[in-house]
Every structure is written in structure tokens, then in C-alpha cells.
Image 1 (tube, rainbow, N blue to C red):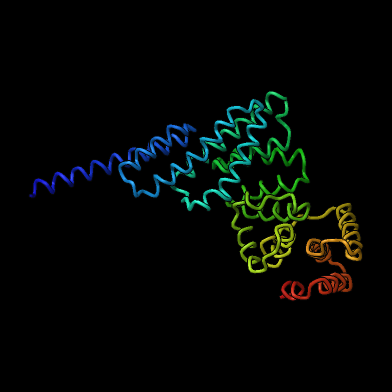
Image 2: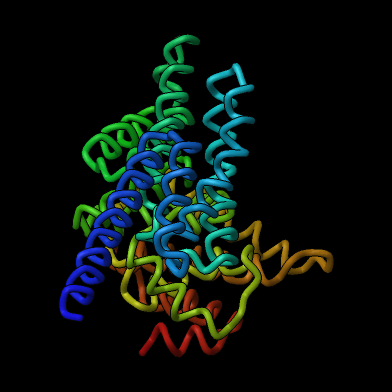
Length: 325
């Protein structure tokens, strides 16, 4: 009897080791982009333990990307390869893994390495073949891939280079701010996020940002259930109120002039019936906040400051109260 128990125990231990070996092989194959081999290894693990959620999740991941890898291999253009991978990766992370209740450590991180590494190589190769190494959009895509891969030094280098080429791209500034946040450069992160959400908040992909600064602002706005386009406009407003967009750059005279022109234009838009007030009002409030910061920093008169505060109060009394408190 004891002999039988020991035999069953040894068999169970052997099966567990074999199961874990197949899982490790499967994840390594995902990491390398050997999708078909990964599916087979997850299947072998499931044969040993047919109740394993991890093995079932791994097979779903491999099955999803096996089909897409076939399509990828048929794309000749390196830029299109990279774009295809980023599109499919967004759908995978935003929809598929949630719909199928797949945990991150069940192979998601492994397949993401192959996805973003392949996309990075594709964009880099395209830039080299077309002599576009200094193209800011290509630098942005490469920097984003390296951010996901965890090489923050390279991501920072690529995105800082992109910013030196084009200083007013919200998408580039936001990604650079995100990298600064991930490496605990909070001062730079807050400054660049503030600039990005002032210039063109609609150009920023919120799903691609990992910073706790942005996550905290969004958490504070969740109960309001804003549509995405309006949410993007309210983020800098609440970023200011919550003290998260507290690092400010000194405005040049020409920038102050352009700011006042923008405020004039936005106020005119409010007099027109066919506009989205849900976008224009928070955008105008954010412009007033910026002008208010300038007035305070330059010791403007009390009358000038009170006029700006009154304009904010007329637009949104609650925001006015939150700002003063």
C-alpha cells in the first residue's frame, strides 16, 4: 500500500515538472515569436493538466497571434509591418485579453516582447531604407516600442530627439512625459504632460500612457463618465486643480499673444450654436488657467487676475470653487 502511495506521489511530481517544463517552453516560444511551437507546447501542458487556466490562456494567445503572424509575413513594406503590429497589439490588449479573462503573467508579457520588438525593428529598418532616421513620427513609434519593452534609456533618447525636431507634437510630448514618469523624473514629466495637453489633447492616445499622474486624474473623473474626446479636454483642467500639472514653463511674449488670441477665438466659438461645448468649455478654462499663471508670475494687477477668475466662474462655478480651494 505504501509503495503504491509513493509511486503515485513520484508520478504526480514528475507530471508537475513536465507540466511546468512545457509551460516554460511555451512562454519562451511566445517571447521569440515562434507562435506555432508555442501553441503546441501549451497544448502539451494542457494534456498533463487539463484544468490549467494558464495553459488554456496561453493557447488562446498563441491561436490569436498565429493567424496574425501569417498575415504579417505577407506584408513586404517595413512601415506597414510595424503599423499592423501596433494596431493588432492595441486590439489584443484593449479587447481580447479582457474578453477572455487572460492574466498578464499567462503569456501576455512574453508575446508583447515579440510584438513590440518586431515593430521597433520594422520602423527602424524602414527609416534606414528611406533615409528617414530623423523623421519625428518614426522616432515616436520607435520610442513608444522601446518604452513598452522597458528600455527607458533608449525610449527617452529617441523621444527627446523627436522633440528637438518638432516641438509642438502633443503625441510626442505625452510619450516623453510618460517615459519621464516611469523613470521618476516627475518634474519633467509634469511639465511635458502639461504642454502636451495644452497643445492638442485630442492627439493623445490615453490608452498608451502608463504614468500614475494621468491615471490618477482619470480616476478622479471616472464618475463623470465623459465621452473620450471631452475627457481629454478635462484632464489638464483637473491636472491643474489636483496640483499634478504644477510644473510650468515661462511663456515668451509671442506665446502670451497667441494664448490671448486663442482665448478670443474660443469665446467666439461659444457664441456659435453648432459647436461641442463639452470640448470648448474645458479647453477655454485650461487656457484661462495658463493665462492666470502668467499673470501671477509677472505680478499682474489684481483687476486683471480677478477678471480671469470671473470668466472661469461664468464658465463653470464648480471648477472655479475647486480652483480657489
